[in-house]
Length: 90
Image (cartoon, rainbow, N blue to C red; front, side, top):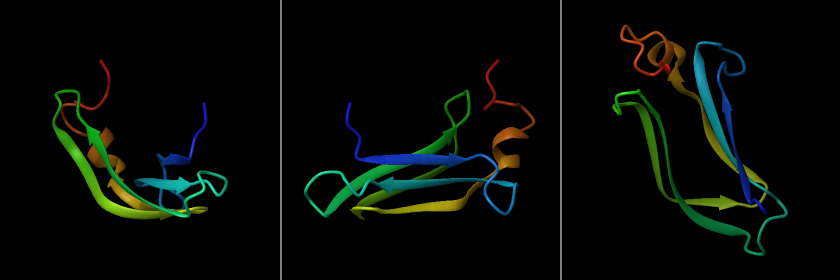
């Protein structure tokens, strides 16, 4: 199976361990087209289906060997320290 990119999640981010970060990267050796437009959505969801945090990107241009992301996408407390522990598997 061939891939064109990579999604990386960082559960304790780089400098500040209180955040979960993510980065989306497009490979330099992918298709012959230099720039592509993509739509994507990244969400952290609770076990009950409610959304804890989300980001939607529409018509984002991704170039070869480039990426984008959010180092402070969501706090770890928001995901893991909910009183009802809805995110954690039972």
